[in-house]
Amino acid sequence: MVGEPFVVTRSRTAVAVAGGVVVVAWLALEARTHTFTRGAEVITGVAIVVFVLVAAPKVLHERVRPFDIKGVMIWGVAALVVVGVELFNLFAGPRSQFPTISSMTNTLVGQTPFGRVMLALAWLVLGAWLVLCGS
Amino acid sequence: MRVVSLVLWLVVAAGLVVTSVIAHWHHHRLTQVVAAIRSRRVGAVLLGLGWAWVGWHFLVR
Image 1 (cartoon, chains in turn cyan, red):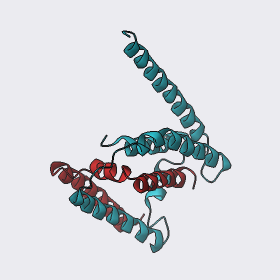
Image 2 (cartoon, chains in turn green, cyan):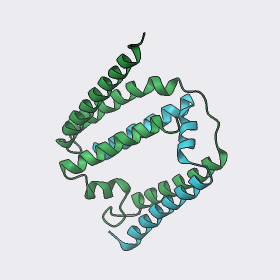
Image 3 (cartoon, each protein chain N blue to C red):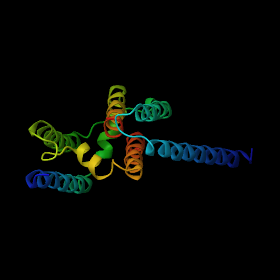
Image 4 (cartoon, rainbow over the protein chains, first blue to last red):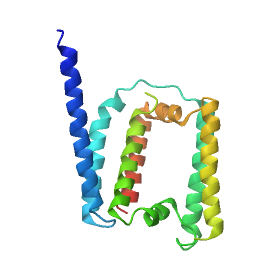
């Protein structure tokens, strides 16, 4: 059929627009919540469930890729350094003097609705990157 | 915030940027490592759990 690609393109566009609307609505809800509240638990929990349901079909049908051993070593060391500094600060003393990553982001952007939107958006982008990178 | 701690985080951030650039030049990109982990069932589950934990930690707790 000549018209099929057009129909498929329109369908994908509709899905993308619907997805965008859902993300914007979710960000608006997340902006209205605060840490340590039931609202934040529900809104964030729903996002985790929906994201996993959307991402699982793509991830689970992926062919197995070989490991780049040097890459694993380089990025493994980098990850260990970050985790080491984070743990050192976590156990070293008062958070005001030994800040962790989350305490810094919470102070810098986590106190306002706009900041929460930025944090939530960054988290979604991280998730999309984890699902799509290298494919 | 103690100056030492701030400097430590800045050094770590700069180190990550330098590592990223050098790894890119030598074709040992983080995307390749993540894609190889993700392509295995256990790796995909661990990445998903890690991502969920990050969101929970930063947005809820």
